[in-house]
Each structure stands twice: as structure tokens, then as C-alpha cells.
Length: 397
Image (cartoon, rainbow, N blue to C red):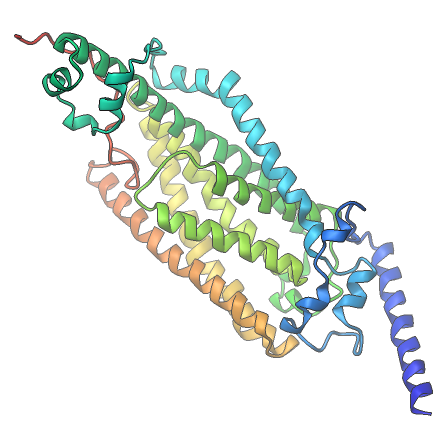
């Protein structure tokens, strides 16, 4: 009798599950599917479902069962984010080679330096010595090369590297502006009709049968791909490099885990809030790098930077903690109870908030320098001098 009752309950649960699946299909839900050749490498949801809420809306149905129907995501359904990261890397290389470098040189009023023929002995000395510490007399003694030849070679190499560094900064800022702008536009059109704009309880009310549109699926893969690309393809070294790496790792974890746990609504809101201010920051950098060649760019740069500072404060120091962090910490337990993933998400989101405060302190420093007329560049810039040098003046031998 007990076995029959259990079988009957199971049939009811599966019947209700199929009703939910049918409703999602009719509403345009993206069913998570992966190529056949990737399926053997997928990670079963049963291995980690115990860390998520144990009381789904459909009582008695495991996340593994829902995942088997394609309603709930699995690890390998994120494979497209890796494809996005690879495509972005290839596009970055091609655009830099054929478009961005020439645009950067023209915008900053720099001429392409002649290619320097490498000399092994001088290159070894040049590579292990800081620019400011280069001594052509010491190099001449160490390499047995004429002092004037050492001076000429070091000047040419320093100018070559200085131009490369300035071009790299310009290209990186322009490239980031492009993909952040694309993400913001895509994100807005993806979530503009979402119910959580009116009530953040909607982040959790439909779990684990949260509706995922095709746009949301691609927004997630694009967003994750962008941060993987940035983590593996960042060429400019800054004084806050460690904080930036922590930010990228934290963001990648948050995007991936929110996707795999079905918390895609709150994840999309977080991505959109973060990307808006980044658009203004990157385009402000682009104009800042052009100021010396085109003085009018200073006024554009200062204006855009002011918009960035205001946008950063509103999105990351007000909207993010007031609505996102509050909803995760206060509202989600009321809908889903306490679970291990709650502490993971609350911890990662709190790390992001600490980084927001750290970066806003840097922004305030830049605002102070801007108001006092002492702003000459990004406070996170490289320590090395990036300015191409003039031709060396002849020295008495």
C-alpha cells in the first residue's frame, strides 16, 4: 500500500512537472541543451544540488529531475561563454592589427616609430634595467659597444615601447567601451519588462522554474565570456591589478553560480548595474589619452568622467546595496529558507561591495585632482613613463 501511494505521488509530481515544462515552452523558455559530444563531460546536478534550497516550489521534485527536462541549467550549458571569450580575443587581435592601432596613433597625434633592429647584447642590458636607470656609459662597458651607439639604440627602443604602451592603453579602453556598451544595450532589452523592477521579491518567487528567455541565455553567456576574456587578455598593468583580478574572479564565480543555481534574474540585474558606469569610464579614458594632441578632448573627458562618478555612486553604492544586496540577504531566505549557496552568494556580493567602496575612494581622489587642476591621468596608471622621448641631445664623450 505504501509503495502504491509513493508511486501515485511520484506520478502526480511528474505530471505537475510536465505541466510546468509545457507552460515554460509556450512562454518561450530557453531549454538548456548541450551538444552530444559535451554530454559525457557534464557535471550531474545531483552532485551539488544539496547546496541549493531543498524545498522547490514543486515539492518532491529534485533539481536533477528538472535539469533532465532541460528546465534547470547544468555546467556544460555554459560552454558558449568560452566560445564568446575566444571570439572576443580573435576580434581584439584583428581589430587592433587593422583598425585600432592606426586610430590610436592618429587620435593621439603619434607617428609610428621605425622598427628597431634588435641587438642581442644591448637588448639583454635594456631588458633588465629600468628606463630611468639606463646608463649608456655602463652599457658600453658591459657590452663593448660604442657609447653613442648604445645611446641611440636605447632611445629608439624606449620610444618604441612608449608608443606601444600608449597605443595599448588606448586600444584597451576603446575595446572595453565597445563591449560594455553592447552588453548594456543587450541587457536593457533583455530585462526591461522583468517584474523585479517593481518588486525585488520576484527574484525568488518562481524558483526553480524561473523563466529564461533566449535573450537572457545569450546575455549570460556574453557577460561571462566578456569577463573570461578580460581575465585572460588584459595587457595594461595598473597599481590596483590585484583588486581587479579579485573583481574578475568574483564576477565570474557570481555569474556562473547564479546561472547554475537558477538565480538568473538577480544575476542579470547585477550585471546590468555594473556595466553602465564602466561605459563612461572607458570612453573618458579614450578622450584622456588624446588630450595632448587634441586639447578640446580635455573638456569632453572631464564631463564624461563626472557622469561616470555620478553613475558609479548611484548604481554601485546606492542601487546595488539597497536593492540587490538587501534582496539576497533579507528577502531570499524568506522564499527559499537557509541553504549553503546563500552564504556563498552573500559573501561574494559583499566582496563586490567592498571593492566598490575601494574604487569610489580612488574616484574621489581623481575628482579632487580634477577640481584642483592636478589631474594628469588615471590614478591607477603604470609607474613607468609612457611618453615618447625626444631625440637625445649630443653629449661630450
